[in-house]
Image (cartoon, rainbow, N blue to C red):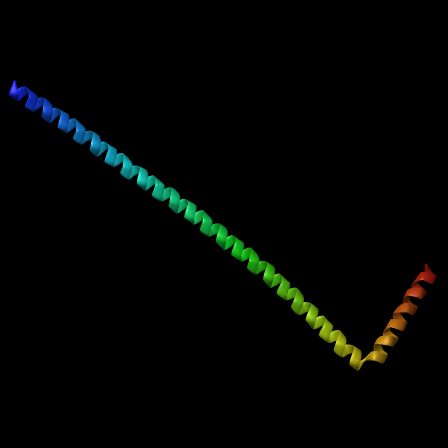
Length: 106
């Protein structure tokens, strides 16, 4: 009788041990899966951040380029006006004449 209960006890403890080991293994695998999901999420977030940053820099670069171009044109116009006012006036007059001539010939 005593031996039988000992054997039964041993079997029960073995089963419990196996169950706990199985549970632990499952938990470990779940953690691994969670880690990989977290890593994937982090990676995608990092990619999005980089993309946003790149878009921002593209926009600022474009804005700076247009500003520089505008400044250059304004500077040229300003200095050109100082130097060649008469030449500009003459050119404008000629352009006007040319336009009138073209209209008449049509």
